[in-house]
Length: 527
Image (cartoon, rainbow, N blue to C red; front, side):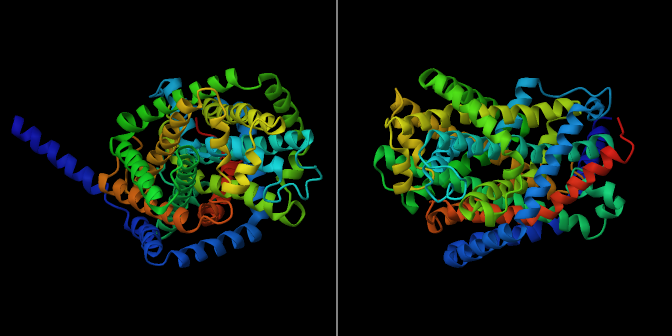
């Protein structure tokens, strides 16, 4: 009897494994392009850089208007869904219970999407605007280095890091979650388009095309984020410990960071990603609280309040500001670049956010994935960026000079070295950067591997070899773009990759937005 039961169990496991075979139409095209890019970077890094640069310039100049329109539309949809009766719909049905407690859920959602961005640019971006370092203020009608420039810098940073970008993540996540849990479609990007095209979009060649584009976008986006992290930590090692940046330093960091997120994703969602996320978010809270105590609190409150006012006053102008009016330095290299990388992440981030959100209402989903991360970003930039602007105006630290001399991400280290107990805080920040990228990358590598697997459920782990292969390929491309394509800002090559990722998935994201409009405002909503 026991033998028969074991035989049946083995047959069921074999049958389940057969169902979950590799989706060759997604895995192989995406891997050949990403893996080929990694090999090309090793063999001829200049050619890879030229391809990425031309793609960057062409995509943002030619499609910038579409990025701007779809970002505003996504924000409007998310706001309506959140605050209307649609927010009461529960993902998975009325009787479905959440798997994760609120704190763990928020930690996984926040750190899964934040990567290294806030730490990298929470100080650097307001200072770059304030000092007009790359020409960002030339057409803004604001004199650089003035009190008004500080308010402008804060408002523009709030704009780029809060409600619009997180609306993109949230919209993709909601569409995936609703189609998977409530309409019982597959866990894929292509399934989110069925409200527009019917089930035929999930058959034939179409799902392979759509999901391949999603994999390419997030692979390039991850390589971009890892590259930014490498450039930032490398500049910190040079500034603080006087060890010059070099390919050897970047390679060492690449191996360390890639190994961290690879080991986490190999351990799975509950034993790896969740634990790393909870550790990471606690470090974020501690660092933020420490700077609240150490920084110029009154100045930060006043400048943040004025910055929010300036942001709201100029919301529509900034949202639809064309490159030829606002200027390439500001519109293309900052706002449109930001939108490109958020869109590159959105469809696969949507799968991850959907996986961890079963049993939550749509309103709860939006609070955790749209509102709270946006508020967290505003508070973070208000404290970090506000303190940096105060110090620059009062000659405590020449952050503008540091960035001009050492690159767009270097100001952070001069800032940290001027903090009390900076010698303790700096290594903690470096560790946090590694953790921050790891918590974003492990979740995305898992989502890539899920998308490359047929008939996989949200609570199943993809094959380990897939995770390992994608992690290594992404690490190689990031290293190449930082080591050989740094450019004027030190991270130019990284920005090229991000724009390519966003371009690869832009039209799919536009269709997801249209799909959301149809499923929530035209079709019958299934509870």
